[in-house]
Image 1: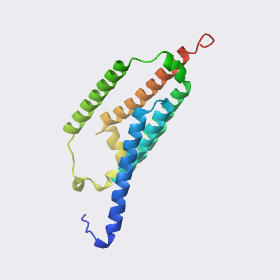
Image 2: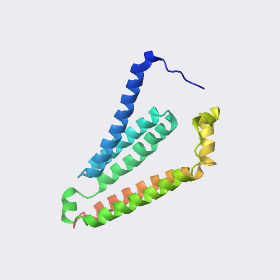
Image 3: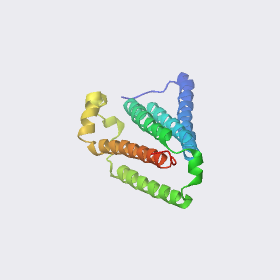
Image 4: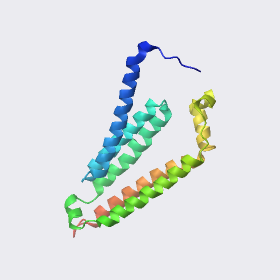
Length: 187
């Protein structure tokens, strides 16, 4: 399938470019808020904003299924579980009395970023990228996507499950800290 560009559609091209830049900016600003927030609930809201921006980029790229999964899995499941953890976590006053060691936080963040970079880099370099012209037309149906997720992309499917598991475990850890520092009357 070939497309020809009609010069009268130039305005729509500019509009699409502006939408892409808006979604990319939303993802970037949400990420900055998520990393720099002092309160956990603000970090969760920044994360949700960033993930919505990424879903918008997916929509712009024409991958509506991935965008829907982005919203359902990451914005819905992960952010909701983190919100429950924030509700059960210790208050900022309790956190100020017993702050976490800053170099340990920076080191843990560096190790996590290095691990994520290695995993993503390995996945990108080992993937056999198929040009869009070679994609089978019926591969965009829900049934075809489901079959590919459970056969060709089973590892990716399991990694998505692992992300959800890590989010749930992180939420439990945050909630457990809140219960542990409840004071003499707490449990």
